[in-house]
Length: 153
Picture 1 (cartoon, rainbow, N blue to C red):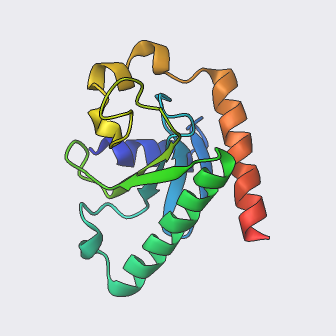
Picture 2 (picture 1 turned 120 degrees about the vertical axis):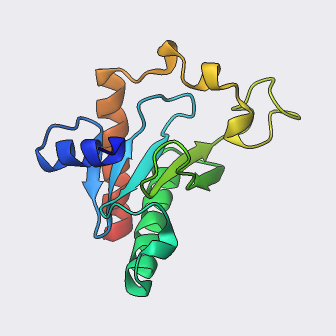
Picture 3 (picture 1 turned 90 degrees about the vertical axis):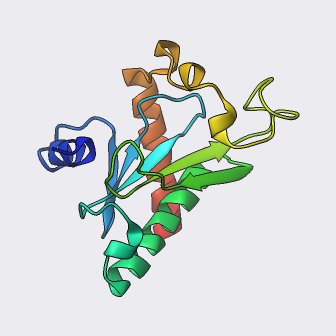
């Protein structure tokens, strides 16, 4: 079974603590590791590996939902720039990585700290010290829900 499908199953059973909000075509969840504070994912409700496998209407709605999620993340976490990626090399289920970026957030990596999140060594981005705590998770979820409320009103 698919790891993302497993996480969605937990959402539908109200057992996924990272779940923030359901949109028409997917679920917004806070990322497990928070090197980039506010790192969020948007998980497609449909198990497809690529955006182009959705019918045209679903593609348009999915991209609209993802854009709303991205705007909410940018608003909630005061991003100076958003990095949005759909890779699927590890988990072949359509999902988006939403990284709110701030000046210098790569530290000494890259030129002047500017560049894609993937310039950060994998061991640093996903280190144990970057795992989100229960307290942090509650704060991030509250901020993100507040941003969604502002954008949807």
